[in-house]
Image (cartoon, rainbow, N blue to C red; front, side):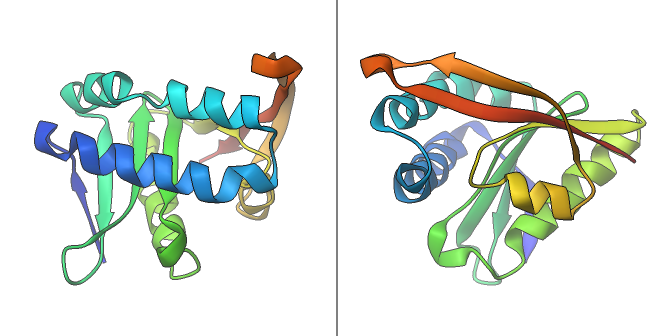
Length: 152
């Protein structure tokens, strides 16, 4: 396993990891309007903007196959996704540790928005919920998430 900085030619790979994971996992936790909101929020344009800022990382298997991604904006961890077929193999833990280490070079805490599917994982890794948010989505659906922080 290794983590590398994403370059512009990786934008579609990051989009694929993100959208595949959202489409596979999130419908078990969220209604369609919320899933659609996540997919549009993680658009190719937003991914490209983050790659140009040097904020996007890709976790790869020993064979160089993409397995997951994370975006670090300041002290905030965003867009942390691991493809379903690579979940449970340590890629999420590796990406989280990598992000926290990078953040700890400049900040005393890490922050993130936790989806319902990931909240338990973050709690087990020392994050605490500091606020709860609800976003109105299409079809009258709601997207609920926690904003969490961890002292580093």
